[in-house]
Amino acid sequence: MTWVREMVVGDAAAVSAVRVAGWRAAYAGVIPGAYLDAMSVERDAARREERFAAGRAAGLCDLVAAGADGQVAGWACCGPRDTPGDGPGAGEGELYALSVRPGLLGGGVGRALLGAVHEEAAARGWGALVLWVAVREVRYRRVAGPFPGGPGQPSGVRRTGSRAASTPGPPCSAPPRSGT
Image 1 (cartoon, helix red, strand yellow):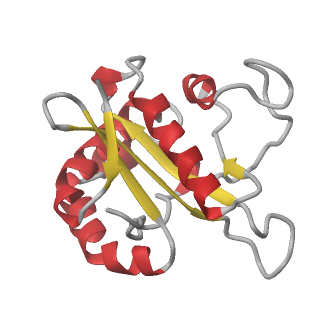
Image 2 (cartoon, rainbow, N blue to C red; image 1 turned 135 degrees about the vertical axis):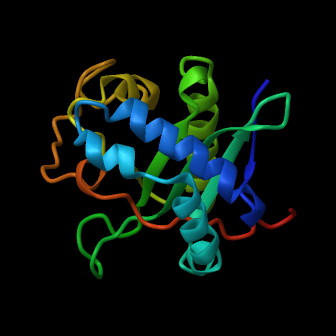
């Protein structure tokens, strides 16, 4: 069984370990190996801890998935879509990142996280939730579910110079939910 909950600052090291391992597995052959090899769990965790409160204040939401053993198995971050003013995309949300421990891929962790992100989006009243997927991320397109073009078909939307293919995404931190 996988449980999804809000991330707390004490999860930073575990989330960073999942994120770095996930990037190395997902982006091998897509991002230069030297970049992936230089990724550091310790540096990522320190940055994540440092930015945690600011992310919450900016309305970002970090969620972690934990297995029956209580260990962090995956992490997702969502928040308001980064759009200027009232332009296209205003009032929408964005899934900034979703990482699953590589050995657990296909076990439902990603789906559990994505379901929780959809619940968060509905609770915030976002009219849509945007996810940028690198062209080579076929596995992750399947996790995201059907696209407007039909099951397993691309959405027809492409983004060149994708953030995922160039630099790490924004620091993510969850605002507290009412009742928790």
